[in-house]
Length: 355
Image 1 (cartoon, helix red, strand yellow):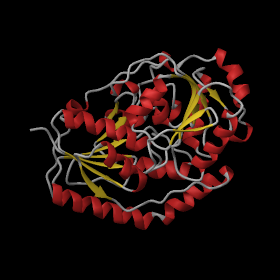
Image 2: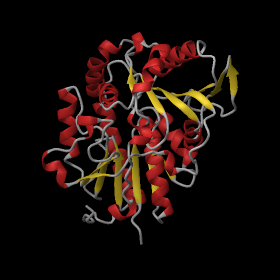
Image 3: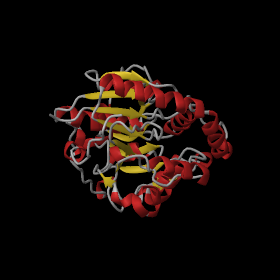
């Protein structure tokens, strides 16, 4: 019998929820029983995509960005220490879920305090190295508590660079599982281009709204068909127009993949899951990292270094200028994706004696 899985997912935009949706769907199709634990918009996203899975609410982190990117790192450190009581509540919630549902394996996507001594635990992250040092040190200590680490990238990853590079003793339990989510996870095929530019947004507020305002302002200067997916939780999937821009409040992963396959250019954040979706597609990228978010800044830097995207900061974002520079950029179809069979990888875990 295939092992049952308790999957704990970080609520930070839709990126973590998106890749866990794909992993969970593959495991369900392989005959695994899946339990989903999360909070906030990520939990609602997972419910929409995985209605057959039992849902376990976790304490909410309530993460918000600083209005000024300059203070984001300091705010992250202060927020982390304020959240310690929430981490404790979360850990006890997970232990209760394990006692009730008795899963054989626990998978945690970037919830470093979701682990257990009762069942083997897997940690999913595209940020092996986290900045600043204080949070990175704590993160590495927590990673050591897990039996395996799954990295949703390929070895030598050109997107995250140093953030996905494995080092030291971690090499013994780390597995590169391929880019997730990816358009190939759906029935979407490479299609004739319908849109000149597609903007796909998500992430905590107020950064998401700031980016939306910036995109719409720049789209008005482009006299070609553009499409915007706002990424608003609970929003309608019915389209409407603002000028020549087709707008959706919310789309499922498969429909987002379809929009991207029909677009020549992507504009949006440099979040890891968002870029992963386009790996292998004939599409060029213009990325605008969230101010002060080290992971997105690193992704943007490495994409630009490998000539896989135009990277611009939010304050100086100029779409016309970025479009002029695109001729020197490779499309994302130049990145090759290699995927590991998740079910087979689960079976390599040795069961633990329940306490």
